[in-house]
Image (cartoon, rainbow, N blue to C red; front, side):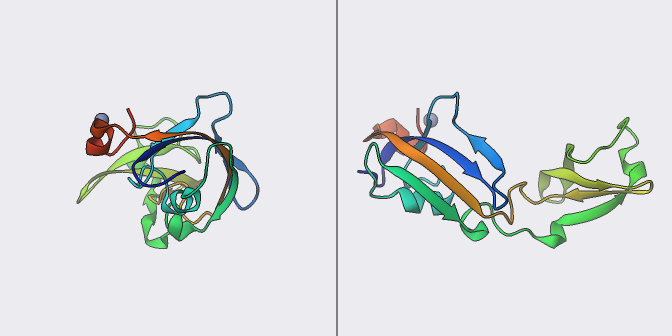
Length: 152
Ligand SMILES: [Zn+2]
């Protein structure tokens, strides 16, 4: 049964509220995580507690329990001149920016002749996500895994 300090393997797919596929383990190894260590988003971790190998799940997670709300304060318009080193700035590009508290990632969301709009929110912020999948394996974590807080 899934509980804290178990290593859990799941096959899954995740879609947003418009049913667009965002990610899936299709064609890859199942995702392994350490339950209770915050390796996966809180809403999904909570919903998987108590499940057994072979159990299927469908879990819809609100932004607050996923990647957070979309904060408009993290969206900025900057002059296109700020990107003079870039040949062509396009929507969807991401850049590393330097802020007061270190580096952070921004994604370009709009480009006009004069300005570029960049968004420093997590790309999945504000999205309600639906996870569908199946529990493939559950095992005890090793002491080393518990000490590190992740799966080896
Ligand atoms: Zn480690």
